[in-house]
Each structure stands twice: as structure tokens, then as C-alpha cells.
Length: 420
Image (cartoon, rainbow, N blue to C red; front, side, top):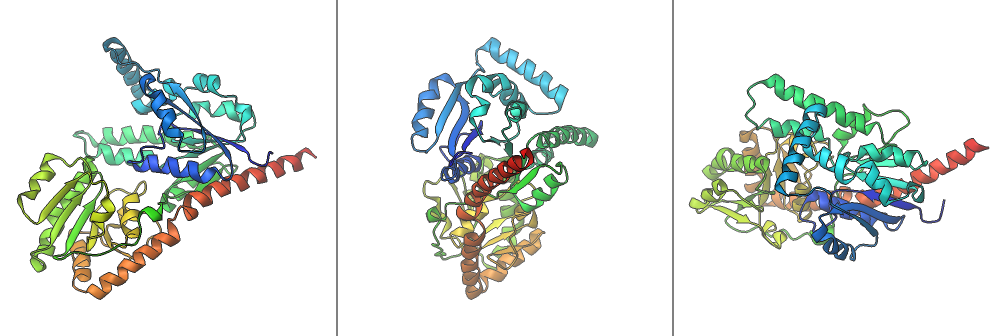
């Protein structure tokens, strides 16, 4: 093996502009990999944006390989795409995104035309959609690793629970088909990355003994989220997240309708701040009450969040990773959340975060902190300390890519030993 092995990243998610958590994850992974690997990044883009994509990669120390997007959008092509994608969904139980990415944009044929598998020592796939190209690299003796980003069938289960599907058996069948396909995809890789401890157990139960399971939670660039807690008066309580998402909108409404009324009984002047981009008209209408603030997109959101006494996160659904919680706790803002919100994140109640299940107990936990400024300040410092311990870039992506490098060396030694 050369002193700096060569890594190929295959991803439909670009590492910029960085507004979304998945974009940040891809970027931080690339940046952490550079000290250990020579990195190529294979993706695709519409023809008119390819030059823009190359320009963005100039800020990253890796070589971009950008395929021209093959999905056209004339009326006839759009109709044809929807028909074939719809048939694919019915036939496989997967999503149209699996068809677009795995069968069209990053198909095995296109990947083989773009790269020579023998040029690499390791291939990292962002999401499982392009799984059908895995044999190209394994045939060349190149191990492949999947970054799951989360257990997608659990996210699907949460998404369709909001859809108006009359028959419960139909929802269960939909999730079950997708789950079988996703779990079968995991077993095709040489290694798999779990994003939290709970999903690590779920994935481990499905893997073959020869597969390597890595743990790679979502870290944060803590220098961008410095400790800066300075709570305003009257007290401010926030919900923080992309408010255009139905799930986040529901959680924000739960804060307003179910939790804050209990807090307002004791702190009638307390303010509820809904911090996040793309709030719906329904959320904006809440500002008819002068105590409710809906920010929309905020360029320097740290400055707003630092003024909060605490952040509420009444999230439902045990899947993925709540990177927004990491951000606010890094600032030193205590959090009151449901256990589902931090499932598998190794956070303990009383260490910068208070965990409660019902609306009543969430409000009680918030009131307990608001009633005791010294306890609130202590939790603020604990929040920052926990983020430094668990979710710095060094302790997440840095550790993960270092493990990749060590794993490759172990594989090389085993191959040399078996050849003797």
C-alpha cells in the first residue's frame, strides 16, 4: 500500500453550501479524510451547473469527478421518467430517488466509465442508493464502506405516518418492503457506518460476521459554535430546526400549543422563539401573540440562539441524529427534549440536557430550570462540556477516517499473511 492510500467517495450529496446536515456531514468527512487519504469525489450535476460545482470544490483538498446529469426535464422526458420511476417503485418497494441515483445518474455503467476501480484502496458511499456498483470495486479487491446517514426505513415509517393512508396494513407493507431492500443493501458492503448507538445495534444484527461496523456520529465544528450563552430577559424558550419540514412544524406547534401554556402560567412574559428557515404561514400566524417570535432564516443563528434560556425539542421518532441539538448545546444553551430526540446519542439527562416524555413533564423540566438560575447556568456549562467530549470534529469524523486507515492496514497485513 502506498504511504497515502487513495479514497473514492461516491455521493449524490454535495459537500456545499452546507445548509443541510447531510451536506455538512459529507464536507466534514472529506476534510477529515485528507490527512490520511488522497481523495476523489464522484458526483453528478446538471450541465449548466457543472462549472459552478468545480469552482466550489476549489476550496476542498480533493479531486472532483462530476458527471453530467442524465435526467432531462422536457415534458416528454419528464413523463417518461415518472412512468419508469413509478414502475420501479412498485416493483422494488424503494423510492424514486433510488431509481434516479442508482439506476440513472450513478449507475454501475456510468461509474465504470468515469473511474478505474483498480486505482483505489477504499470506496466510501454516501447513502446506499448506488449499491449496484459495489461489485465493480470488490471484483478489483477494493473494499467498500457505506455511510448510512441514518436507518432510512425508520425515517420512511415516520414520514408515511403523516400521510392519509386509510389502511394500516398498507403502511406496514410499504415500510417492510423498503426495509428488506435497505438491509439487503447493507450486507453488500465490506463496512457500514452507523450514525448513533441505537442504529449501530440495529445494523449490527443484520450484518455478516466478516463485515466491519463503524460508529460515526454527526460532529460539529465547535469553533463555529463557541460557548456564548447570554440569556435575555424576559426568558426566551426556543424551538430550533428547519421549519419547512412537516416533522419540525409539528414539533414547533407542540411547543406552542401543549408545552408553553404550562410555562406561561408561571412565566407569563416568557417568549417562544421558533428559529429556522421556511416557516409556514401557519407558524407565522402565531406571532399574533407578541410573545411568539418566528425568525425565518437567520444568517448568524448563533447570535439568536445564545440569547435563549433553553431550547425545547419534543421530537418523535427514533432514527437519525439531531445535529441541531449538538449546535445549541455547544453554544451552552441547555436543552429539554424527549428521549426519542436523542436516541442513541449518548446524552444523559442532567448533563446539559433534561429528558422527559409528556408535554406536562417537558414543561416541568423547563420550569425547574427557569426557576433556578444557578442550576440553569450549571447545565449551560455541562452542555458545552458534553459537546466537546462527544461531538468535536476530532472525536467524530477525525476518529472515523483514522479508523478507515487503520482498517485498511489490517486488511493488507491479513492478505500478506494469508499469501505466505
